[in-house]
Image (cartoon, rainbow, N blue to C red; front, side, top):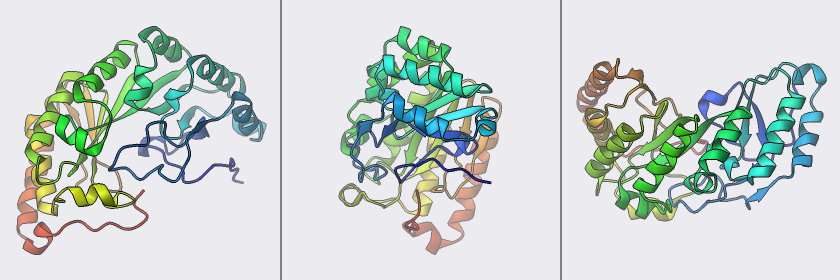
Length: 296
């Protein structure tokens, strides 16, 4: 038998949270200004009360609550939840879910700025252990065009603050985000940012056209081949320590999986081989990727 919470759709989660209980602590994204992202544009941001979240949990059967080990706090930026309230939420989860081992959430630069190092350490002590952080690019001009709202240095400092507080970070960047204009700068600067932070996880997504028409028209989209070339260039400059790389999002057409520094050369060889194979199919190589409407 399946039980469903009364989610406000659409609902998103990282691929690695597929087995987690998803609890909507917030609706939408507190930032929600990024020009490339259409995930939450249809939602008005709001913070749900602790009482609402308690009602959600208590509508689940007792036997189910006793087995939940992981919780993902949605929507796009649950870390923005006021600190005292977030402590209440985490205490609620521990009371209602006796088998709980880990809580995670998306985190924007805005939400990390709002939390002090000591507050992050306290949240970690309450089992909030993993933050999913959208870097998008390490190149400031690309971030400005995308209207990210923060420069790469500020995001680096906030990410390091979270790591120093004991949080695990899963960082994402977007292939093709800079278009043809700044593909090289985007690849090199993003690799340099990841090298400086060495997050536990680094994931690559691929830019696609959905609910972001104005931004998509403002760049020259990369072809399949150019995305592969950008991937190779990024990997050539990438050498973090103790970082797991993944490109397993539905937007990706090259699946990469490995750990740094151990698998660095193997990952680079895989990407270079894909680039060479792609060149053999000229039509595909020069084509702009076309994505299905249900990409998210």
